[in-house]
Length: 86
Image (cartoon, rainbow, N blue to C red; front, side, top):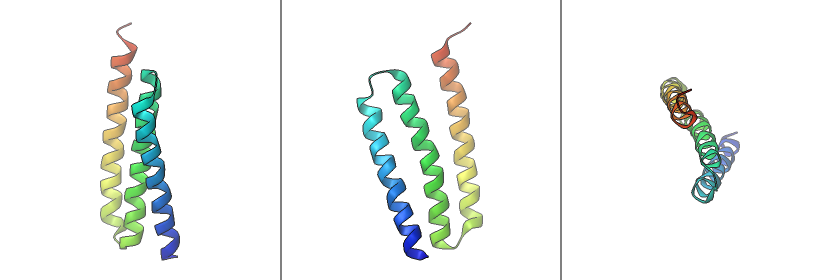
């Protein structure tokens, strides 16, 4: 079971690396923001998988929730900024 979590961690890390490359070569602002939001979601999953590997899920769930709330607030702020004042 431990090897499964290591493989899952490597897969999520690969997705984050691909999204960072996508964020830098994206043509529009929306492509770059979409890549940023996917990175945010995958980092929350990475934190939880590290918690499973480390057997300290209680601490890692708190950190993942804090990071997810920060990502949500960032999403709302960026959407308001990109959308303009209507």
